[in-house]
Image (cartoon, rainbow, N blue to C red; front, side, top):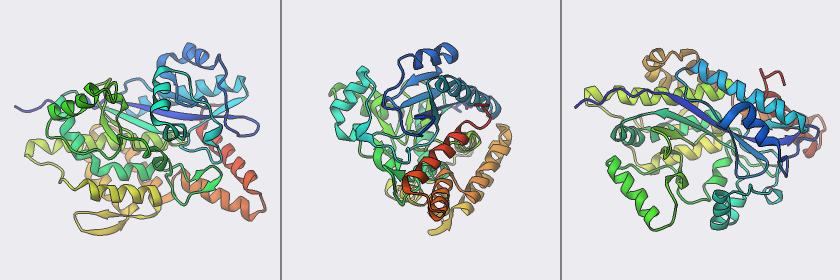
Length: 380
């Protein structure tokens, strides 16, 4: 029996660092009233994160690029207005350029207390922020089928969002260092394929029944079936300072899933490649972002990333037309050509250093530039 078409609804979650307006330093203790003020204005779309210096937003369930863009802008504007009263501001970036994890305090909450106690230093080092994208796939068997196929494209999505080139004041040499920190946790990275939804649930239940995890929310793969919603949740991406970049990548993920669904009536599916090979492209996305090459497994050769994105956009153009997000998908070409936040951060650092700025001065200026990009269009 043919599976009915999913809704392909979309929602986004973004995690932000909170910095002092004057210095750019990370906040070590979140003001007591901050969250209540945010939820009073923005509802349950704003929540605490693991570290006191972080805050998380989640959009409503949306059906268009314009709708999700407007929701993100409303959330960033609201948080910026409220945090400004406390002398702080959000920055949408995956690593603070010079923040030190061992000086942070984790949020006191049962889930976070369990994480810190269980994972020890691997959890305490989680001074990182990410962007998660949910796409509505209501049928469970279809959800696991698309989950198995979509992993191929995850490195491409990561490269387009790279925003974490610095760690503790050092240039790491990577464009997306965040994953190097996150991968210290168990149950992270690229997921293995499952034969069916039933096999997936049996696998998860084994860990739950063994009391290793309370539920599937403690599985942090780059892509996972959401435990809370009938969605596929893409988690590999760095968070983007520019709203337009984040929306473009979210829409690309949405189009990829629709393209994979579109293959089904013709008894087609995306060719399966070993996780070992996809992991190689994942590393190349971490290391080089949009400025490097990736393996085209079909051709068996390395290709410049912008060329791969051109081909991917051509592949999903029918879906972009159907979902009314052609402009957003085309914007991915601009990102691939002009660079991501990581490229802009590195370029600014090198320019400031050449002009005689100290490391500390240059890194502070990067934070201020990130704040400006994060709040662009908010009026803050």
